[in-house]
Image 1 (tube, rainbow, N blue to C red):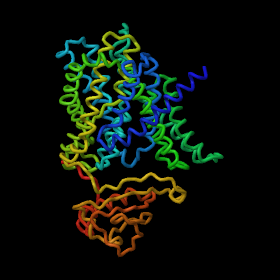
Image 2: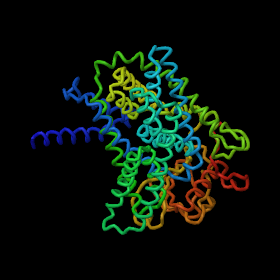
Image 3: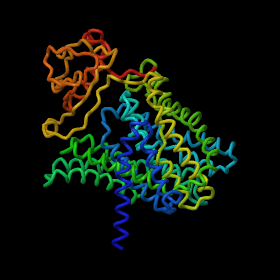
Image 4: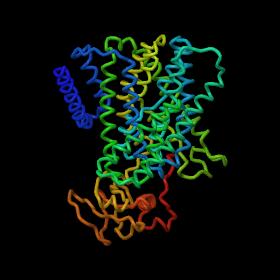
Length: 519
């Protein structure tokens, strides 16, 4: 018995270390690390090292556990000041956009592949959810406008909840006696109750952690993550959306200036990586490589319908419905605040950046474990499609952002460090690169006119760092380290954005540094 445990630990530790090393390797060769984890699982499976694993129900259960940790990390790291302006669009994408995507994919699958309506809509439902792990891992490596990043991250954190409900409903055997409006009321209740539970658990947990004097700093990260799991469990007990409760709880806690906040975020990030690695390896184990070849044609049909029709249409419809009530639009028209505009370039990028990863494969295990007719073919097609999407979409997001002109090279990026002085100041450490073409070049430090509570603490030039003085003149290629308290961080970022656009006379030109829509 102990020998089996030792062997399992040996294999598990080896897989984990190989997966960690694969992150570095995938970064160098440009191959998405999530795909490497899938390949590791397939290599360990019956067609590789011979480990046989075909328990779809266990995969679904462990997959849900992994998604809880991944979604919790996304909520904990989301800044409310960035999330708030795009919450309407993100919520619209996660609800209305999901329904549009399901309808379009279902119609195409029914007409082209000849599948019955229930199975066709199940294809659409399983593939309608963007993947939080894929979105977080990919977007955080790119310099993009915070508005676009926040929209995609919030969408991926919110859309799991309604999609899981719809997949469960479509996978279950049809029951008579329930009118269509009953299902609508049920979905509405689950989402509303999940959001309410998330707010309640988050608010109570934030107050408790800020006033409790725990004997060890290491207990705060455990308590924070434990609260997100509690939110999921509480939601599940009352038949509400546990995933939505997790994300809302994470957002409330992450913006509550918790004690040892950096340790909390670092711990959550580590757990999310372990969850991603374990989830993708497990899904690779569950796949049967000998069946995947036959799923290529259905996967391509569904993929083309999703990329060319469903996703663009869902983004457009969601953006139109999410426009402000006063009649403004999201497509760069007058009368709409800059923070609410997307523009056609931003709309195109949102359409292309709807990344699919482990979530659709996990969702495909729901009908598989329920014994739904056609579930095997659905799982295989989704698995093949996720591999194709991961290879094509994730590797082309950078070039696509540059082609569409939605990059933000002068946008400050937060650096996650754990230091007592920053913790006591409730401050963040930001990095800003002076890129070619930036009007920051030639500006003196004292001309930045940063608000009180924000200051440039270090300039890195030609590989050497020095503490700048008021008369330090910035050059192209400089990297600035900026300390900004939470109260003035948004104002400091707007000021830096304004100077990078119009130079030292930004205020004279009326430049306020707000995000401009990608027209």
